[in-house]
Image 1 (cartoon, rainbow, N blue to C red):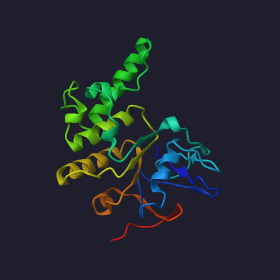
Image 2 (tube, one colour):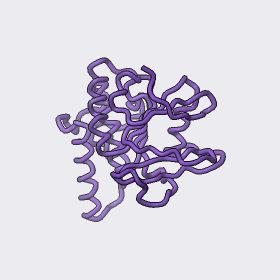
Image 3 (spheres, helix red, strand yellow):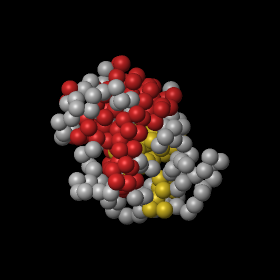
Image 4 (cartoon, helix red, strand yellow):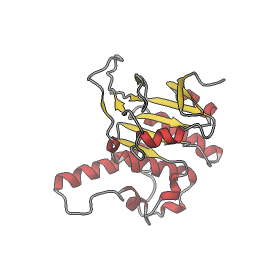
Length: 218
């Protein structure tokens, strides 16, 4: 199923009939603030945020429902700055419940771990490796894996290509092309040329946080 989100203002639902949406605009216009609102890291001063699910025919499958923050993943710009653990495995599983769980829970978490690692192409990296020693591209892969562990309905990315060399940028673009088949992605970026082939729908954000659906500039 594919997802959509609503504006935090009292306006009609803004539908995303796609798996890769991109928001662009001038710095300071409010793009990152919007991602924080969608992720539940900030609260709107008025209105609400809802999600609309669609089937493969583009038609709604149910009534809109409030967007639950726990169903939203977010990868910040330079996410590697927030790594805390000593190994890749500890970093990916940092948010796991520490208390004893049932065998079923452990099996579910193990399946999620393997699926996330495979999805981002980290299966060739030793799980006992220090995350800080990974290349820039692999650090972004690890940050994505951490969010995919939660199996989100919506994955938000803030400037996913920032600070990477040309090879790492190409690798991340290739990875996002794969991920858009698995989860709805909403990306904020200034790197329009590199991401353009992936984009299904795009919006320009003007100063003051006003969104307008608009094709990417050529």
